[in-house]
Length: 229
Image (cartoon, rainbow, N blue to C red; front, side, top):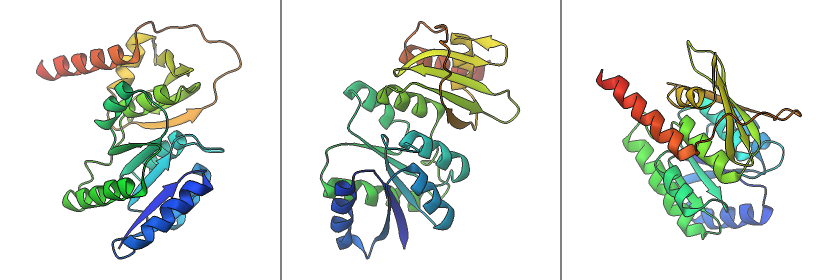
């Protein structure tokens, strides 16, 4: 039987989901955690087939949890719950992560998404729906209006860094590249792993003027051109 892990710091929401999901005991087992740190311990000790997580949580937040899951358990599909984000951003994210559900929602809506995700995973055991791309992480940082540094690593490449200030991509560094050229190279990295770091106390000069959407489109264009050469 499949096991899903639901992560949210709202006790009320967790209890609501758990109670409703009791009627699905013949289809999947439900585990819960109150934040990303507790969820990581569950992942270390339990077999989890599907992760359902909030983004804003204490200790380790949802983005940190997704980064950890992507790095150590890349075969686990992910569903993101959040009360934030404009329709434009949500539409972009939908194409990159397995599923997104906006709070508030009814438990039966989440149950339908969970069942559909588990069914897709059975039909596609290769896990092609599981990967969370650099673009997905960047879009979620933008949506959550976070100030942070995203450290990006990919085999055979130097470490790269995105710096976000209030959800706006402020600067990027990749090897000797800085600013927009660095961001474009990082977006196009294959098989990346992402870690989140606290921003430095000192101010960082703004090295990127273009909006995130424009950078993503330019990265896609350059990748397409490289593939046709």
